[in-house]
Image (tube, rainbow, N blue to C red):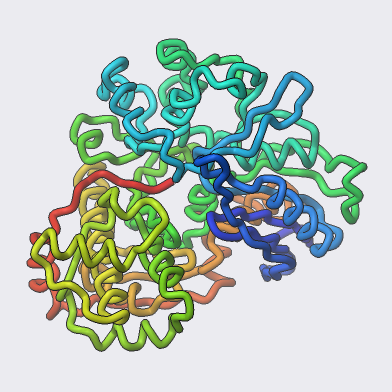
Length: 485
């Protein structure tokens, strides 16, 4: 490190937002959570929206709580967007990707364009709520007809902070409207499906200085806003403390994003059929991955139960019979909010699995099923990409779940290195720090700093469980769909 800086990471997740300050200098890196605020969707007139103005208020409150910083970087979930009119005003709250408006749209688009061409151009897995499908679903609406610009969520917050329009590359690559070969917006595809290419602002890479914060916001100091890897998974992959190339990553939270890091995309027919995605990372890398529903099943179960004690449930789940009941987490029935324990029980009935008879048994079913999904994706990623791995790095909130980490190691038959929990914020902060000159070097150098400064826990696979996991995998099989944002 060659300088001492404080930078602020604005990290917007599906259920909450945070502002985290990273202090870097003298070979050290520390994080302080300055502020946390809820992210609660709102249903109006049958449509599910994000409360974007509530999030904006939380961002400003968090940045004021953070105090003076050198720079600010914004990351969030993918695919969702706000529409601006010609004067730059927001035309309504962004629609939530869990809204039902995109049902059946992917099939219509495939019938018009063809799945093979879509994949050859964009390299994206087919998810029902990709930005492409959201915009086709919105065709003919007054908002879209009036819109002058479209900004993905982190680009919208950045615009409100600076007054400058742009589209950060890692998040743009998740829209199914980015041409991997041309490294530009897929304007031909847009024209074919009736999406105006004029909606989309110029692209820029992570590390670019966007500009100073607007003075009328009255934030502390005179911070610059820096483009980070604004798709939260892209920042989380920066935060993977791996060595070399022989690793798989699991960014595990509401969603599990599992895959390998490559130099070039995999656009084969086998990859398309397996529903793997090629998303852009920093420094020219490709995040080759498939999405798994993730801890959403556990989170919605806890919400349904209301007063459940998660640490106690996890302790009791560890004592439940292993692999007694398993489901496919990627079944679309688990996608919407609702009575998740009831859906899990019904899925077990329909597939002949024993129905969980307690909350602890339901939790064990969720974690066993998620570990099986991790196993399938890690194995498929190796087969399809030709990149063999010897370690799985599990980052994000799931790294706190010791039972899930051990089950994932057992299922994959590979050691799991858990941590850092705050991989997304760390990846955001490291890109800012490099732009400020406080950290030097390439992506491996950034990861070396993580290994020196972050707490990591290793889980070795229990080899005597291998046959049981293989048998359980055969019971589920896996859909290969992928269902996360």
